[in-house]
Length: 254
Ligand code: FE
Image 1 (tube, rainbow, N blue to C red):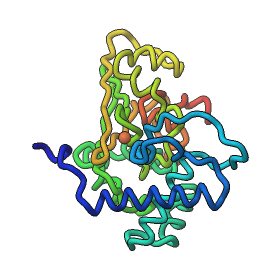
Image 2: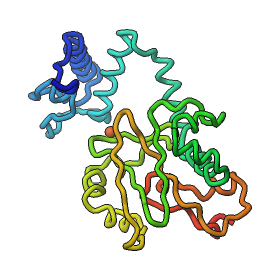
Image 3: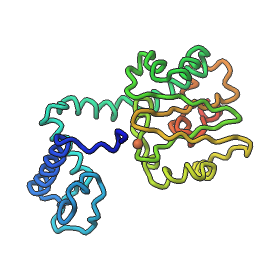
Image 4: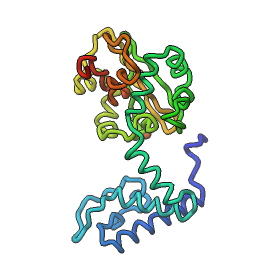
């Protein structure tokens, strides 16, 4: 039996039951719409509830908010996380972590051949050496574009994304349309993003997982000889590091 088929332990089942009780409690106490009414409780927590009618007097809290609150509460109560630590993480992703970090990484790779080599060999380690980035939590893999090869990144299962270097994922990255289409028709998806590549350029799509995230290293734009890393970083967009875009033209930022 593979690890993924091992039944949840009793402790995990109890955690789920407790989280569901909290979700129900939040629904009762805050007069928000109850998502548990008439729905398989485990199905609700796993996000597969088939419950789409409205209740009178519902609040503005979404079902996802409700689910997150319930899970947060049980994690705090069990001592897995502290509320203050959660607040710090959220604040960091809202204010400090974003695609400007990835842009610094790409600009350095374009400028410094030895850093580029390190990045392609072990991106987590190479990115971790940049003081302004800090620790990279997941196994990060850098995939380099060339005129012959264009890389694109997706998480077909859910929304795994290199948060450490790109910040919060865009909505389209999490959409079913992107996740399904990019695998079947990457060239057509690219065209939707306004990118048309020569037919001779191969397109490779990388499927992220909870353990492995990908960062696309775009081709350095022509006409940037002698540019500083700061100047180069201004050409690097979030989308070009996911593979759905290309870097800006030098003329756009000059
Ligand atoms: Fe995912």
